[in-house]
Length: 157
Image 1 (cartoon, rainbow, N blue to C red):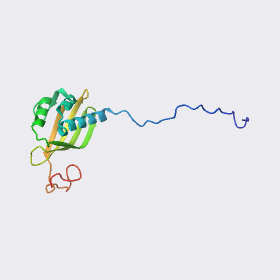
Image 2 (image 1 turned 120 degrees about the vertical axis):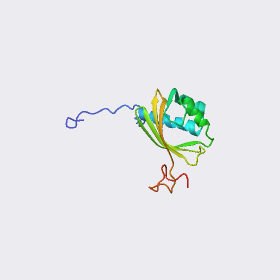
Image 3 (image 1 turned 90 degrees about the vertical axis):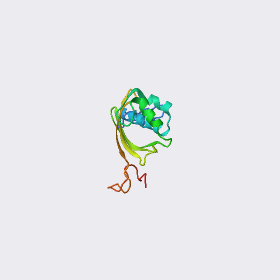
Image 4 (image 1 turned 45 degrees about the horizontal axis):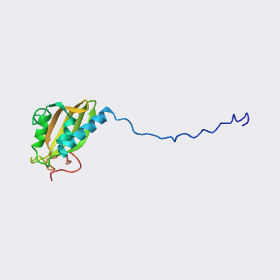
């Protein structure tokens, strides 16, 4: 090239193709939510106690008044329910080591499903502590808003 246009530039040698990775490392909160959701599905829906046990710590603290102490108390309570016992999650929120799962427990032999906010503390990748707020699911006739408590339909019509 001449002086007016600058020096000639050598073409770049071909290298490996550029690739873009949009996968991001999961945050602590996302890992904790996934653990809690997997643990609930494994225990309450699949009733797989062997697979669920490692997800709850041996020193698990249970603050619920209707469940016996520890992991053993929780598993015994779940075993006492019919095989139809299920958990349907509607919302998962995490803040650091705490996860709140808001959902519906059904198939437990009671007249109505239970709507529960489960508050879980995660420690060393396992569920370590649990609190809950429980209420019966409102029927369509009882709902002041006209809307179901979870999802887009009432579970009891």
